[in-house]
Image 1 (tube, helix red, strand yellow):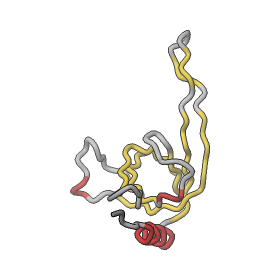
Image 2 (cartoon, one colour):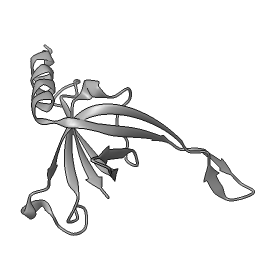
Image 3 (cartoon, helix red, strand yellow):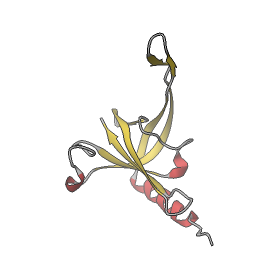
Image 4 (tube, one colour):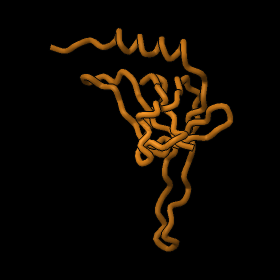
Length: 121
């Protein structure tokens, strides 16, 4: 028996719509490796405007290693993006650029209800 999560997905989307703000999400697609130069070149970027709820981490969550002071937590509805977020992607909020450092998907079954992103400047 499978549980229908569509109501929970709709609730997460509604809450992010209500409490979130528009940001620019940049998908980073790595380029190709060139052996002669020992470098990766030609990264490409694709941007999309999405709505996110961005907050500071709680003081007790900051350990100085995995979560550093100044890191942000962003909540993102799964239907907002054209592909799943990846570490290394970028979020621009209020003129400040952040890298996606870590991603937790809230996924009790086969359906992603919410992405929780750790962002760092």
